[in-house]
Image (cartoon, rainbow, N blue to C red; front, side):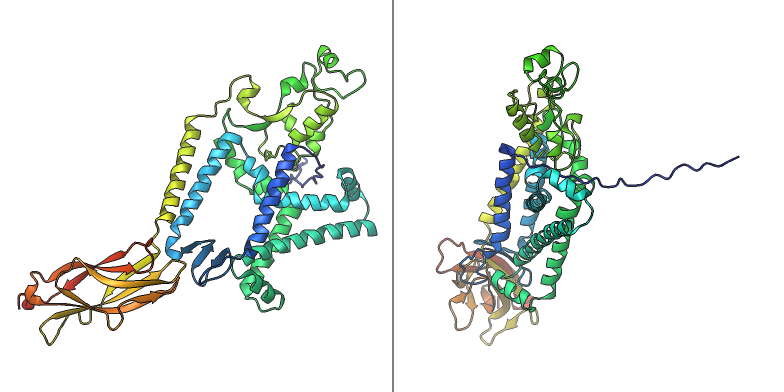
Length: 477
């Protein structure tokens, strides 16, 4: 008896190259505007100068050594890291809200993978030509002309990847100085390592993997369905209008008039394939909603362009909802969407309030405990304290240290009465508090140290609790 082994099946599907065709229209133009703004912010922001009394003169800089993040006039310290949690929470709520309303528009217009892939495809098209030319080049045998076009394409991809990696690195140090050090070999190793890693990852993700990242690597395409409902805006093909009773039919002289097509039972779709050719992930939107779709709207532009050319009504492919396709009314104001919106507003308001009300003056007090108290020659009891004052503002300030809620006590801070502290600096001061034990009624007294700004009326005084100790056997003496 012969044993016929089952044919071995491949675990993974071999990638089918996609050659997207160019298209014009309002959604393509919108993507270009967003692409331009995103690149302008990303590449130019590290070079934007920002005047400060102290610290870097760069508008946005993340100083890991100093444990400070400079964002225009805001300085974020290590203890303010909970703000990052607030930003991430807002981003998550916003993603849920937008997805519930408009599907994967984030993927189609704002995702870094989409933005960089768009540029890489534009470079490819400028070097190798339009879709038919790129397909011919792909199928052609290797030659000098093919090698030149492919080499130029990959060189430009690598150049953009290098600029991407270097620009990211510039956010972590003074941009002009780092660029000089980078090309002179004096930059620190992490600068070279970070730039190299992002150069290679950008080149692979945007140049080689492309739609594979969205289809197989990104988890968003998998769990997005949990946030969709019948009211969610999607890019959809109007099957009833496009297929008619007998399906699609190619455009011909006999079937050019839309009225004739309808009389014969054919739909408005002329089966030109333009919507498939412009799709960056290579799907046919006429097959229904698919998880690969990034809702970029390019197929809408393509179909509208064809409909205009044959003088048919626009909207065969459009942004719509499942309910609208069924003739029902789309409901935007639902409990889910309202809940997301309220959460976004509340979290944003809390974050803004936290940033706006943050104290630019910080005070910490540590009591010296060896010895805890000292009896002076005049009979008074003395406790010593180390006071740490931090100026988290952007200008120099003058401060006075005072006692609060401690009558008949003397504060000894030495020769100085007012302390000057530069921005982003910390000052440590040793102070002594003296009390006559005869006037004390308890061995442990709670009081407050206060630091009062002298030259900034908009900065509130800060206080810190402290305890004064008197030996039990000296009370009333």
